[in-house]
Length: 377
Image 1 (cartoon, one colour):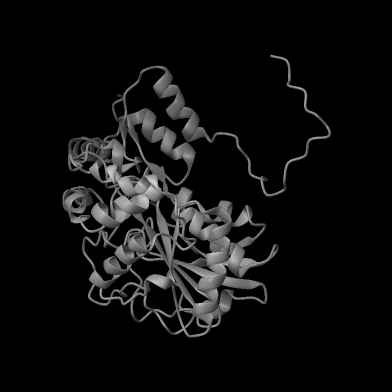
Image 2 (cartoon, rainbow, N blue to C red):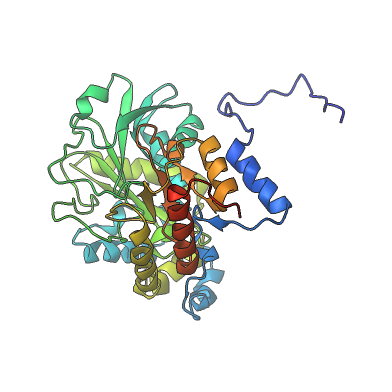
């Protein structure tokens, strides 16, 4: 095939500096699918693809006639922000609706916060291990990520003159661990607390930190949204809760309103549905989902919360190792290195998987570990 000619006048932003080549694991999965070879997928993260029992009337809330009127509020519809405040009240956190900014997703919330807090060339502290997203979000804002160990005893060690904020994922993804009350928090820089998995406590320790939404010690931004709370990633709605000392929190909320007003990305029908049905009735989908997460967590190392677990039954550290596992026993897992677990011999698996698939995969992995000549599938 002839090489495509490129226009020398067309230059793309240095923000888009990442290698787009598929890794060996993605190529192996593509080969399996092209050949019609079945495999058990323990990497699925989409709750709408795992046969969860969504309520039959779950979409009725989108028929609200108020959605035909366009009356935008940069911070989000008051009714929706009040529903988010009520959600936090159920967690024991008092949040005023005026300190809530609605976004289309938590990813967009991060982009708003990076615009608010940092200039090109500045640094954001990001936890490791973690879901591999922050480098991309920060890079699109011309920012640099500085990894810190998730269980660090001392944030000051990682803070430089260019550090503008620290991200804390609570509970952590993929380890599923809550931040402990005894663990330190950064005081000299703003904290971005990502709590998207907070509702899915499986075996929480007694010293787990509560939600950071009402934290007052320093400027704090708490993120969450419908994607995880209501298992509705396609209904794009996230939010930022601003807390901390006055006047910092007030000024931050005002500036975020200006940023949000530039985009006005939160959908009116989704905001209304979230306020009137999905958030108030979230238990209707969370209950069966929690039951599944608890069941599937039997196949992982101890996990405190979230949708993923670590397993030392198999220990693929790289895409090459995961490819070998896929070829040997027909089970797809994430290698630990994908999440920054280079020094921990483990695989990362989804707890969303259908229970029958999870059971069969666990049996195959157990046989693979003990067999001298594992069978092929």
